[in-house]
Amino acid sequence: MAPSATNDGHQGANGQTAKRPIKIAACSGGVYDRKRAIHDMAKNEDVDVITGDWMSECNMTLRGSDKRDRLAQKKMSSGSTVVAKGYEPYFLDELDPAIPHLASRGIKIAVNAGASDVHGLALAVKELIMKHGVDLKVGVVDGDDVTDAVLDLYQKGETFPNLPANKPIQEWGFDPVCAQCYLGGTGIAECFRNGADIVLCGRVADASVTVGAAMWWHGWTRENLTELAGALMIGHIIECSTYATGGYYSGFKDLKGEDTDMGFGITAKGGWQAEFHFYLTGLDIAEKAAMIERQTKALMGDHIKRFSCLKFMVAGNVPSDPQSQEEATVDMRIFAQTRDPDLLSGNNFVDSDRGSFARFCIENLLQGYPGSTMAPDMRTAIGRPFFEYWVSLLPQSFVNETAHLPDGRVLDIPSPVVTREYAREQPSYETDSPANLKKFGPTTRGPIGWVVMGRSGDKSSNCNLGLFVRHDDEWDWLRTIMGTKQLRSMLGKDDVGNQIDRCEFPNIRAVHFLLKDHLDRGFNSTSSFDSLGKNLCEYIRAKHVDIPNMFLERGRI
Image 1 (cartoon, helix red, strand yellow):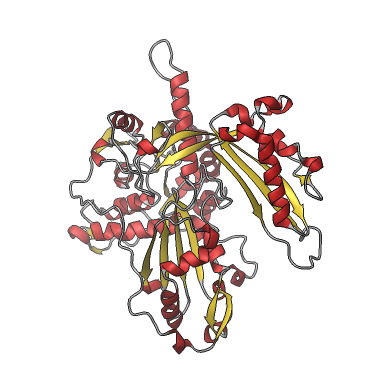
Image 2 (cartoon, helix red, strand yellow; image 1 turned 90 degrees about the horizontal axis):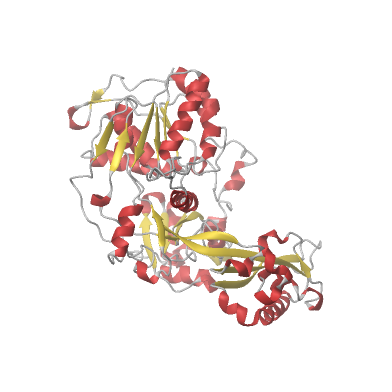
């Protein structure tokens, strides 16, 4: 039986009796995370609360837009509205086998899998509970859907400057269709305090489920700022589940095969997108790619103006004296976006005068580059809808957060009374008192990733990049060589000239960069292979610098 929140303890914040530390297991860092995680934690581990994050910019846009579409289409004669099922159904698959263990062991759970239909998810969860014949009470936190408020302000001329580039929304070129704000943990805590075993949320911030659980357990209020700050940091660390226990780890080779069980904005319809692939083999890859681009654009003629985005890109390179045909083959991707669905329609393939992306790409096959070969699956050349995503700030006074308690009562969660308005941007700086690089002795030219680990990832179209080392002397070297100018040099052709902010975390020997508006609009609409910004770090770690031999003698990562 999991321990309850009534343990004896010592005098803590605000004079209340402090409990032992709460044990929280984060079991989902995304909508497709490991299916068995909730069950395994509930059955096998000594934990108090299980948390999970199912929300991303991808499903926020998809579920939110789908909800608004169905609301518009399904008005009934009585004047009532049929609400779309906009929650994440994968959560139900993961929760189902865990329910008996949650009930028998007294473990609570808080998740944001409600997406854009948290009350619909609550009904589905209650059906599962009835199926298992157990007594678990469900609480719901809502208020994250701020579409009506945002659209009203938008019509009145509010500029909603976006965070990556500080541009007004009027320059976006798209009409907003839905908007969600990021709620905190107070509503979650209230549900737990009032008897909920399972708390379901829409878009709360990634760490809010952890913060809310800790607030309930320790009896914290919004005035316990230091304690809440600690919970916020812990929540962000464990939120992405296996990211904190060995996943996405640049030192992965040290795992030695032990990697199969690692523990645990505003949306607009952007248009349609498609892509076509060729395989290029052997010599003269650049010339072959240039030939494809020339021929394809010539076929497009005036239709080329109908594309909002058209890119020709080659992935990979052929090594000298390749040892197999696969080694000698690279992928060429033609990526297209448009607001005109006919241009990417399969129906137009037989009537190319109307313009057909797939026909433009394929018609030069027999007069193309030597070895001209297309990818056999042409389904990617048929258009699919994509969404644009706009990140901005909304005054908290426009948010109406509520906690729906198991007994049917609804509590208003007021906005914080004690607030402070911070600058939109953190200070950026280069290192103080750089080290004399000569003191590190002889060097060898090689990839910086031989001695430097790191991670990168997206937030909207911004990309965060963190680089860190294992020893103190390596930290002096890293902070000295890795300035903003050095990073731009490493980015090479990928440096688009946008703002880059830099800061340091000396206690973890890390240099951190924030690359503003680097990811071509972000996950939902990007033309880049690196849609989540995860591979930027691995690209930078492959760049060559002069590395002190004394570091290399300790062993390469």
